[in-house]
Length: 533
Image 1 (cartoon, one colour):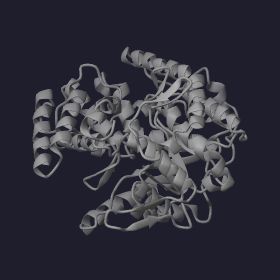
Image 2 (tube, helix red, strand yellow; image 1 turned 90 degrees about the horizontal axis):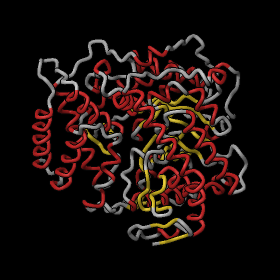
Image 3 (cartoon, helix red, strand yellow; image 1 turned 180 degrees about the horizontal axis):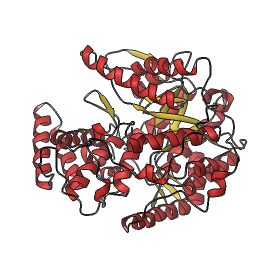
Image 4 (cartoon, helix red, strand yellow; image 1 turned 45 degrees about the vertical axis):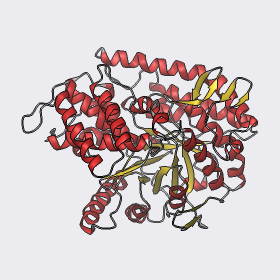
């Protein structure tokens, strides 16, 4: 246990951790926690008040008190040179081998993820920070159990880090006996150890900000950036942040979010899966917001198209980058037909985004980098982005963002079973320490598991009926859960983790009160299954 004034680390020993959790770094974390912890808690309390209002029948809208911000002419700070061309961004957890492959992939940007793609036992969090330090200094290497060596190439993707969201805590870092914000913990360690080094190397401390629900939450991040820069003697505007618009509430405050961060803003990203989860979560008690199978919730359905077009228009009006959604397909080494079909869908999806004005998009696997690069390259030509394309013809209303009708959308038994299967497999892997999981040739993270379990809850709660007339019930879902658990165990899955994952998934879709985030429940179980506490 290491202690510095009011902050202490209570965690298992991890080799090399003393180079990360140093007395000076702890002092920096304490400053952040003391200065911004109370404001964070107030913002989370405000979220609960909004939830009560929505459950009482209210609907979100564009704010009248910030109309002047939307109507005034202003822009965000110009992008740094290494964040100006973002046509392909690859994402992945802060795991050594995956980081090397991502940085070497040919993508323009690599988002190193401490959030949805990382299961957060202490070992993963601390080694992730170590890996980032080594990556920044171009010393990151890895040797596989078979003896294969991985090292960084001469040309690397620009590193951007995603800390955990405002709602999460780091239970191993205690401020006056209470867990501190995981957001401040992740940001603080990465910034403290790497900001100056990044600047010396011609880059900077760049971040993705997840799960924001309104502009006041963006304002708090801006205050964090200002204090952090001042403490290290760095100029204002050194930090650059891209905000994921992955909640329905944030969709109504895109201008305001960019305005709060305008000296530090790098753009907005269409976080499609969390956005869908947010719609289910916020309107879970209202049958008119019942959604069909996840496979039918494509970016071309009207309410998703409205959200993504508003994002492009907002970003380019303010001189910011608009980054599209994730291509989660993992190419098969064995099935050429699977690849051909999936890659055609990836090309179609990215061509739609490039045609809509997006400046780039995400991929989950290095093999997709050249595919998406080609699609965006055909539109961008020799330009680094298409921010000059303003999309003034786009007029998105409050009602369009909330109109969740899906033409020919339906709930199927296969969709119910798929949600159970994906949720079960993902939670079993998460409890085993893996936050990014390949399932059915797709890279799944916490966002897709959130959709799976929340749809089950929603369908059960409203007595939804499948296309064949079968009612979705708690008993029926539990039967499927037992069947899927038994099958996965028979196929060689870890019985202990699958059983624990099944219990957790059951608790999530059977709960009387909707659990806000599955990771809050899953975090409590990590230490029980040998994944590190």
